[in-house]
Length: 167
Image (cartoon, rainbow, N blue to C red; front, side):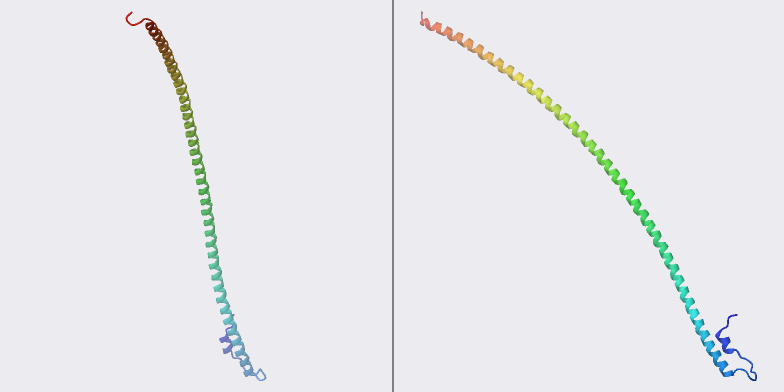
């Protein structure tokens, strides 16, 4: 059974002929009651302090749990963002490669077209050179034929000069 300060103060002892001095006993009981009361207050204060400390500890544990969950969530989000960025980078690279392939094909096609155009221009040049050479040769022959004809006429004119006019 727990002894309270009030019980200590109210406790009365019977008096006997050669017993303890009642005033000393009562003084001691009052001191004991005061000490017991101080101890009870201290126990109550410490109990309340312990309760607050436990509540604070529980609150901190809850916050720690919340922080841990937030960190895990943040890590998951970060991992997902990194994965998304990696996938997007792969898509960009794939698209760039595809586009580069298209550009190379277009370049090769354009190169083939230009080479064909150059070959056609060379064929046209050869054909034009042949035609021009043919035309020049034809004109040269015409000139020669014309010179020969002119020489023949000049020769006939010389013959006519030999004959006086009226003869």
